[in-house]
Length: 415
Ligand code: ADP
Image 1 (cartoon, rainbow, N blue to C red):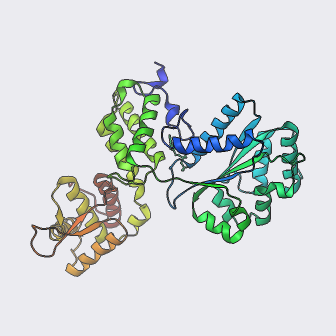
Image 2: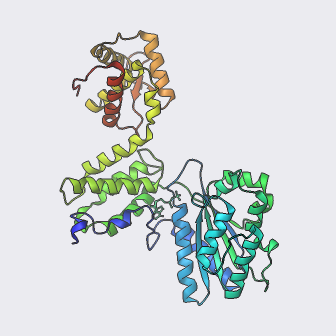
Image 3: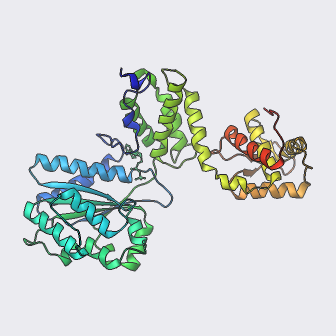
């Protein structure tokens, strides 16, 4: 056991953001399909595919980059075995936001011999095509965050067109297309944008792979693979992975965003809590703490700061009830709790209709869930709950801080 690795971690790097597992247990089908498809084209001497990988609006951490890099590295390995000269080139529009920068990354990864200084876009493209021809190299060029390139006012459509339809501009001397593209975009909106701006590029896309947010069982497999590689065997249990997977899985019971990045981070944070406490096992309480810290990231500090003192008092009352009791919270009971808390802070509780208005406002910005009460309750009352993704304790602490600041009153411990 290395000193720096401690009681839990066998290998911390496995949980790092950039880590690509040696084998994709989830998205295996998609990876195998893409690898086969592209490899056969190189073997037949007819590259030139444009493949798109994309997700859904607002979803990230769903494996777009991972699948892309995995396919690229796998192709390099298989091409080597088959004696095909092939290189995978990964570019990301965040770090290379213009066409020139992308071309520089491509040239830089191909050979230090290709010098683009002072070249026009067309000359740069020609230098790359010529180099590939001379060396008989095939390349797969991945352009990640491609939507930013399409949406950027700084990128000239004509240049983007010449990059993707490179062989129209610079035909290869021997007529063999050697460049394929993997365009990685956040969601399908990029296609409608392309269709209206550059239909010729849209029609060039030969295959589209849509990726869905991860389900609970998929996240479980992803986490299990990381746990096996990152931790000592006795430091983790399937139970802790289940909790995390069902918290993030789209078909689960937590925040359901299907984001593997957040799930892996939560596992890492839980392991760090365990380690910090000198434990040699990651326990449920470590996981719960990690999830609660992560989910507060869902609540915008700006939303909370923008609330009136009385809205904050209502929210505090809901958080307090949730922490203390599993009984459903009716509007009547909440009103009572709100009154007590308001008085404690030296505020005059507002009347009935104001109180209802606060609840409506909090519900409209997603800080409360309001549902009509079920059978067994008298009258037409509603049940007030915190959304599942908002942890009561963490919310309580944050709201209490803000109220303290707003009212200038020090806080007695209510719990
Ligand atoms: P996206 O590009 O969709 O935002 P990423 O590919 O960057 O998502 O994935 C986010 C994190 O989740 C990365 O750390 C990645 O290693 C991990 N991950 C995503 N999909 C998988 C998968 N199928 N198998 C293993 N790890 C995955």
